Length: 361
Image 1 (cartoon, one colour):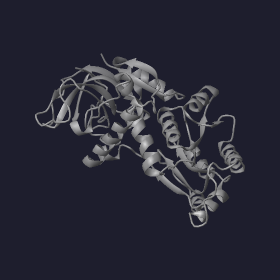
Image 2: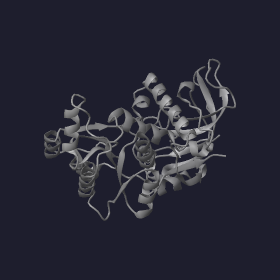
Image 3: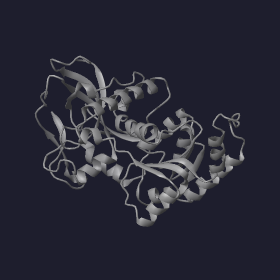
Image 4: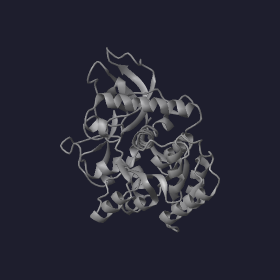
């Protein structure tokens, strides 16, 4: 079969098209999938430059996201059969084979049936970004209807999914983006407060926005005495002092300044591990902020089988939401498998809206 291999760490030039043997089933519970497409994520470029999880297992096939048709099923496979369409987030970090290839193998429990109303190519763009956004907003910060949230890089892969999820949950959404076109996309997906981070101070704009919300009529009047009146009074008091939740997909200075955009007792969830200075930590502690992190690869890296099944169940929820018209994925660039190097270069250049995929004949 054809596959993109990296034989050593480095820039996009280390990616080369090779012919290698078709993978055999590792166990009776595995399936072999003829891939139609593979999603490309920033994670892929980082692991290409520095294979942190399995540096001793080269050459490697990158790509966590895949979609295709089951070509062969193990003798103990019960959830699927040959010819079924599946999509998944599996492999691509150095141990199990990734999806920059014509075929891959994976445990049947990690496969989900893709949405029937979009192409398999587009489905390949969804797994990592949807699971990441879901875990961040639902499991880490427990976002609730009526709460305010600031989502950074809202037109990006994770960002544009997060905006749709937050909107479906009934949250009020501010976003950062680099231009009017990206802000327009986020607005169409449910955001109400666009912030151009190149021209505006996102912290001040966020504080101004929450102040405006505090002055506007509250959608729900205070409940009668005895029905959480104190909690609602605190809610009114805190409005105007920042958002309930910040979702940081950027890291660095954006993450550090986001601590000032969250309200007292607010929550900040980040995809990156930005170092905190003592002053940052003291400020976050003074404001009673909850800071948490989202890394959707943890179950795969730490080989947590039950957690990987739970993530597959999240993907099944994604299927239902896409089929109901509640969530969509924007694929803006499609490259043939042989041009994986060009796809990496484009992603690393920055400013991508939506997702990039590799199409596989």
